[in-house]
Length: 288
Ligand SMILES: Nc1ncnc2c1ncn2[C@@H]1O[C@H](COP(=O)(O)OP(=O)(O)OP(=O)(O)O)[C@@H](O)[C@H]1O
Ligand SMILES: [Mg+2]
Image (cartoon, helix red, strand yellow):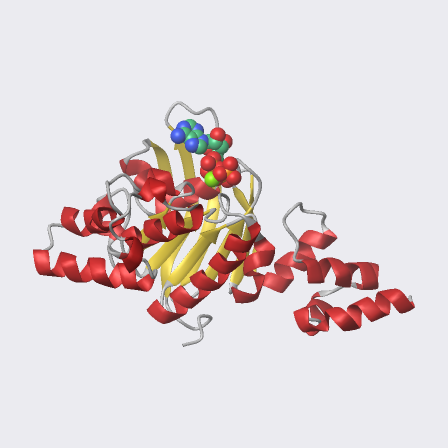
């Protein structure tokens, strides 16, 4: 189904949050929706509220991080002020920025089993979910290894397996490439896009490396100082950010287009010239 027509599964209206003992709000009047099947990227400077929003959408706020939370919230029908984390975790899974914070068992397998065990599922169901999750991230070979022995990329995948074992429909990842080298980050972008297609997942990705994911996305949301600056189709957001000099990571092809067309650069051109047109664009630059 076209995600633009699919049903809204996450909706927040006039969302505000202030951490306990904080002086100012971490989030101010956030209006944000996600439709089933979308792949939404959230970016913005440090401290703009990206992780805070992710913590609300997974119930960690206010259940584990107290504070003043206001506004309408519907996360697949759940509200973190009324529902417990484990109820939300079966619908929305969060992969933390540092996988070491998510992996604490002695083996990968035990980490993957941890969530389902805590749901009180039967042994056979737990076993099935562990096998399935390890298959999905292609980590059967590493199942008996200690998470700390693994490379950053494999730790990332183990953390994803642990979250997928809860069978969520929505996957939120908080800066998953920040601990990866460039090549692993590129591989991860394809891995994530394949994963969401194969499992029909809705994905919310908090990420600075916009360029790596650009071609896969339904929408980009730019946050700044606890607010949403713009939330639109990827090419609209990128041209807005170029025009208004908003410091986000701009994919290379747009920088080239901007250089070639200067002030005349508009969304139409950004749509017309895709990555395959590099050569054409370079010729234009060379020819003046
Ligand atoms: N546990 C906390 N207690 C008090 N204030 C907090 C807490 N966590 C975050 N904040 C504050 O809330 C605001 C938003 O922080 P948040 O971590 O959501 O930003 P972010 O966009 O994820 O930043 P980064 O890119 O550095 O991860 C910041 O001003 C931050 O200092
Ligand atoms: Mg953060």
